[in-house]
Length: 283
Image 1 (cartoon, rainbow, N blue to C red):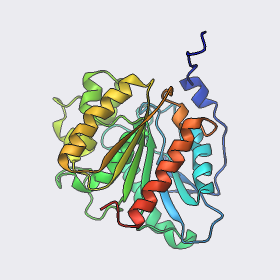
Image 2 (image 1 turned 60 degrees about the vertical axis):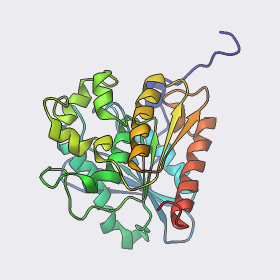
Image 3 (image 1 turned 135 degrees about the vertical axis):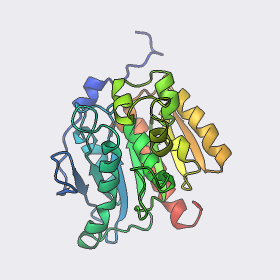
Image 4 (image 1 turned 90 degrees about the horizontal axis):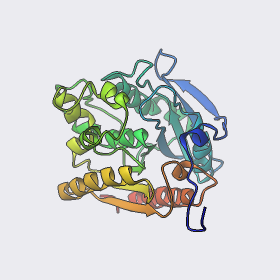
């Protein structure tokens, strides 16, 4: 290897990320996958709040555990972090259940707010890879058609979304075979077979989301970068504030590796977005 080459983290490396235990674990439903883990800051309440959504190509083999270190790091930055689990392809996440789980997990924060002094007026959704799709979707789910099973009249408002190497344009992802058959499973087929599912479950179809967005993508994560750029063009055209931050010499997993330099960018972006929202800059 010459000096300009970079060894990128793999999915196997991701699965070996350290397990960091939460402060609390709560169920938001009766299924074994319907729970979240809450990481609390040492700072004085009320606590700024993040919904954290793991990725893994929508597949059951990838759970929330590798994101525990991310949750703890963000708690160290003064956020209460709700790291959520949800059903995926292979363990009951066929459309519409994956989306309904994520929505129920988000709304469950209302039941935890008083107990843990959570500030719900400026909640951020943060997600990696497939979780980036879901973080963007949470920000826009109030735009789902009323006839859709994903529609909710009183969903928890999301003030801003930070998407880490996200699958942002779902139609484009399916067309380019960016993910596995698991994406088709959780979407109920491709856009020709299930157009209404895409209308309600794809962030691009919900534009404008009405919330500021930051997308952080590694320059070595080419397929994801192309997907995000297609989405961002549509988001900006629709009037959303949507920023792309390119992380140099970074692949798909360094962004959520707390020991990697790219993760400093993630922390700074989240803190800056929250500050912008609180001062009115996110309107």
